[in-house]
Image (cartoon, rainbow, N blue to C red; front, top):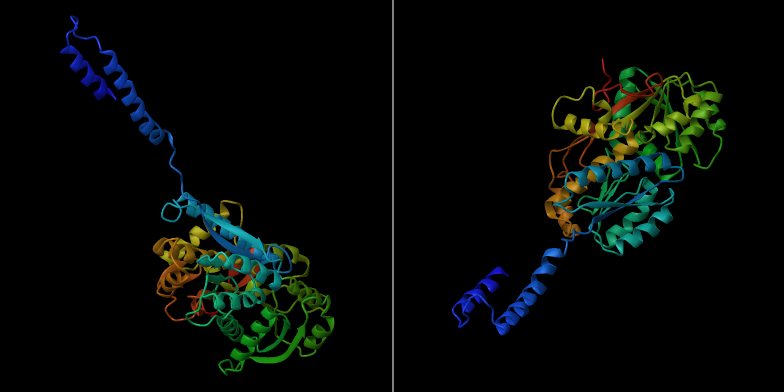
Length: 421
């Protein structure tokens, strides 16, 4: 406004006033009218604070309660940790993210209800659910709506190539291969298997039997297969039958609370001195803590690659593993499979959104992920160009052993299942 006053003073100095500096009343009035008009335009522009973009919401379905809560709670913790890391580093192209986590209570019907509400809002991505039955229940909704890109955390899901569905972790086929490679190399020739009759148990057993029947493991014999419902409180009869075959090793194809039922029966039958090979989904600290009194002397698990951080060569994958551990060690947590199952899938989704933008369509997100190669995650390098809808395979699996003294898992094999020397 100074230029307005200057112009008026110059005009007045040339007037008839003897002093030459007295402002004409009309001129002065024009000055204040003009000044008020300018102030009305300038002041609001200066005073109004810039409004940050609303956080980009990513919907997550996990099992915070119910029999799969062991895994679901750890998955939720992992997703929240990534939310913090991403936001501290500037978000996605400057936009903060918000993980909207909902509990399906380990119930497929509830998962469908939650997913229906999410899909109605037409998001481009969705994370979860936790386990196979819920993922299978949600699958038709995603297929019918051509999206959103949905990253199920259960490795036992086997999506069609090119679909909007992805499966977290290495497949149950590859898990079976790693298990049998390890068992045969250890010289455990006679095996018995017990499985729950839920979707996870059926898939784990089915893939194990298919691999066994491939004829690639002539030194291994499967002598017996037993089954039970997830809500059964005792499997004493099944374990007694298994014991009659005098096995060298017991295959436990269960996850969650069903695993406790099996381990308790094995201890009661005096079979806790035999090695047990259990499922990837049981590599959960909360589970091991609760099962301390019923754990066999030797229990092995197939596990994601992050477990092998001590033997992983230096490079991007090891760096990714260190970031994974650092995020949880800072909270006093030794991470497990629950954290792992959602960690890499969430980072892949974040990477896609950083490249195509949060306003991208589901198809644009899908196309980006399907073209992604050599993406370093905590479990290994991801390559989605093979149509597997999971990005990793046998080389991202190790066999590990629970160490009760260290209260953690120790890698017992190389990637793929060959025992360490």
